[in-house]
Image (cartoon, rainbow, N blue to C red; front, side, top):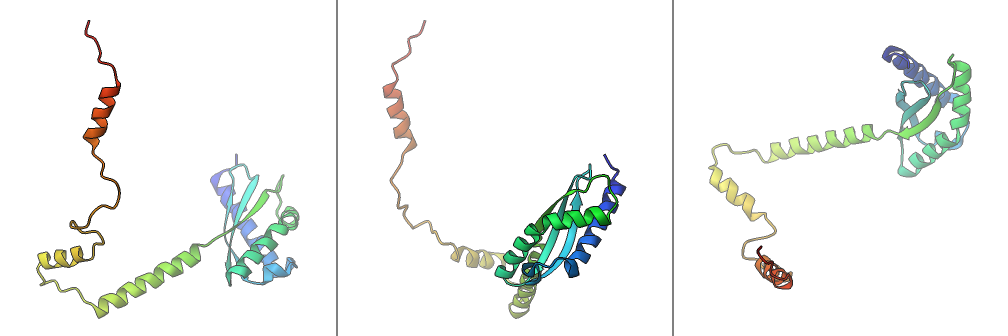
Length: 172
């Protein structure tokens, strides 16, 4: 097992080398359809496996095509890593799409919308709490007056039926 420090150094070397390969060495046109960048590399403790997380900027079709291109270039990437990075054994390479940037952008967008909504509709702290509760209860889809559309089911009736099916136990 390699030390954590060595694993981190190897991961950083792999990230740097794969980034350079993406800029010019990989000739697959599918990889160039979207802007591809390496966001992270996770290397196993025994340095045998490397998960390369890539972010692809573009349409969903471009993302899918770029990931297909990267998967087909896995052998080339591994052989190039073997030549560029001095290790006893070159790790197996797996490309994984990293969507954390898109999720972060979506969260920032939602926070911006929330901030805009609060500016347009400020909260009145002087409003009594009971009125706020009444307004919240008006939004419920199911009121107490609504009837249940399913069959009426009585738990006691089912238990009574089960007791009738069982023969009475005899006390010894």
